[in-house]
Image (cartoon, rainbow, N blue to C red):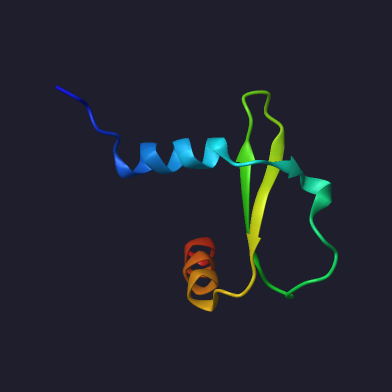
Amino acid sequence: PETRDTPAEALARKLRQMDYFPYESIEDEGAEFTVLVARRLQTGEIVFLGEIGDDIPLLERAVRKLAA
């Protein structure tokens, strides 16, 4: 029987396939508050996957997690 990925495994696989950039490549201009998506490589290096600056509900959820 074929085994199916859990939602977390499927998401991790998708994120691993994304292009990544050095953390220093984040633009200086943009929203004052934003959600950054990063990945920690096996080497320990942290790389930048993308930025989500216009999703207020997502930002609110992230802030609740940080403030908990």
